[in-house]
Image (cartoon, rainbow, N blue to C red):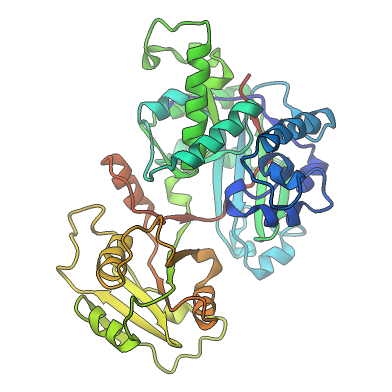
Length: 455
């Protein structure tokens, strides 16, 4: 992997909680408008620029892209984003806190003392990733991108001439990198705050030591591949804009990319790189990505259960006091599903022979449930376009599935066991693509901690 440090644009320490935001694609325009209300420093004014107009304004209106440019210029002029004088790498840590951890984290908890936080921390390195590594397949993907979303992100990168938000990569963990990160995080962080509304802790360090920066670059050169965990559209858009700018440049490269030395890459234009936060694969949290369905395709509940019995062993959860704790009805492992319907929870286990253990796609629970339940019984063949199905990230809990069925909005809910990072790596390495709505990573990266300009 060819990476390089960059001169990040960052908010002053005292403004970070006003500037930072959730990613552009985890909330809609009205939610962004509400979160940014009364805060002119919120990054939503740049990454969700339609909030600067009357409600209902099309987010693809030319005026909206123009407003993003004006807001970005304003943020720099006002000193809400200030550029580092030298090229840096950065460490970005995210911690999942329990209720006690949230209450005490600012006062007493150490990031190293995970027991006091009651949660898990993952440590990422913020780097400039090389466009050619993406274009030539060394940065590997496991999802398809939609052209319309890709074009929108490309236009956003192009007009701003910047990566406003990072993408989320995983790399095969290495103890030498972990040792460097542990040393860096002994120092006082530049930022340390709890992100609203999720309640995750976000901590950020600036790496100033040149020898450490050079060593990180050297170690990444020994890593054969990285994997897009979250941000397929942003990765594709950033790489394509970089490719465009390279083609428009008067400078012509005499050699192919892999023959260029690291020193040549260090002097390459910024647009040949895009901003990524790279986490070791053994620290990441992948949680369940569940399904809710509006109807049973004309079947009664009894008939639906009868058809399920052809491919699944089924048992009803009885005499369980769930209240706020749904752990008793969570899927217990691969190929076990939890179904909620008609006020009851059921356990479904796929029968042997109904899936192919030697097929990296066929063995996935999203494939099993799509083939044997959604398609075979309910007639839902295209998860991307069918309006009868919706998807619920596991961060909302199984209580959200039950709520949506009990409200009458949905007829049934299906909870899946989460995929593993190794499954993602195996599929990406084999050149395959995962089915839609398979992975949900938490915590999400906060935007606005650092921005990467392309010139």
